[in-house]
Each structure stands twice: as C-alpha cells, then as structure tokens.
Image (cartoon, rainbow, N blue to C red; front, side, top):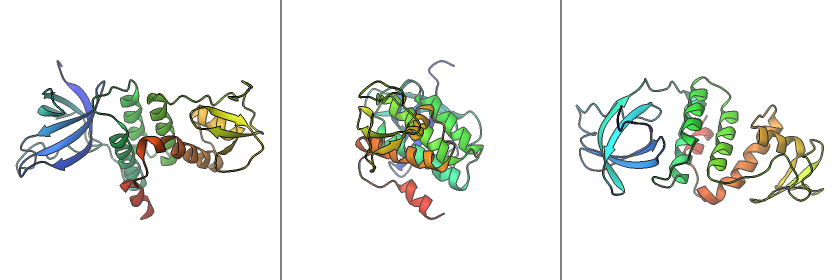
Length: 230
C-alpha cells in the first residue's frame, strides 16, 4: 500500500477540544508527532484506534515538526497485555519516547520493539524482555561495547574472573568489587542477551541503567512507579 507505514502509538496528549497530538514510533522513520484532527470527538473512530500496543498502518503529511494524520488503520487487535507485562510495555514506550530524536531512523529498532511487546503479550519473563530490549536500543544508538573481550588486553572474557566496566570503553580485568564490577559470567550474559539466573538478570539491570543514564536523564519513569504498586 503506497505511503502506508507501520507504526505504534508511544504517547498522546490533548491539542484542542476535539483533537490530539500523537507521538508515533514509525517503521523506517523513528518518532513522529502527528495531529489527529477530531480524535477527541465522541463519535470519532480514531478513539479506539490510536491506542498503545495496537499495530497500526498510517498515512500522514506535512513538512514541519508536527505532521497531519491522513489515514490510520489497525492491523490487528491491541496486544493482550496485563499486570506486570502491561507495565513493562508502558516502560518500553516511555523509554523510546525519551530517547528517540524526532524523525531519526534507527535501523532495526522497530522490529526489536515489536518482538518485545509480542513476547510480553505471551508472558515471557518481563525482566528478560526488558533487558534484551535495552541492550538492543543501546546498540542501535551506536553504544558499542565488546562483551566478549577485555578492552585492555583483548583476551577472552573468563566466567570466573571479575571486570570493571569503563563507560563507553568496555570491561577491564580487575580485583575491585564495587558498583561497576561484574563477573565474567555476567559480562558474557550481556553479550549473549541470555539471562539464566537472578545474578545475571540483576547485573544486566545495573549495566543498562548505567549505560542509558546519559540518554534518559535523572527524571523518574512513571512506569516504574506502577511497578512499585504491584
């Protein structure tokens, strides 16, 4: 279908008595803000379509920061997300909304996002899904770290040894035990995006929070507040 693009809603806000501003995550484009005219009217068909986690195809036009929505269709029903899986999906939306620069394409991230929310809908362990997506996001942002070799010597990472993480440089063999220290097992788990026990999961969360901090800032995530209420 010509000029139709796959998209998901990241965030909506009121624009006028009858319209909405909608931040979309659009395949091959990135984050796009569109004006959905009449979307707040009681009988508007857009109300039920412009919802988070509903796979969409969209057409829009315009050359400024805010585009105008021309057409939108739901490709399928909203993905069935509940409880911690729903809050996890909201976290992914909030993370993308903060990190993505308007209309800056990030090659594979749309597929990574789609796969992640599908996994959450299938109730794959949420922490594993979130950590894998955060690592994919960092890679797409150009944050490349070698998880398989010591950055000082080039030697292979050894599971039983300890390593210090040096921001944006990598892991260096060290005897120090502090907040930036990881076991070789934890470093390799990061590289493989496979977390088979609680220690590697906790280490992955610690690493991604450190690595993402320059992109997301210090402002608390609203979605994390939802987790605390569970």
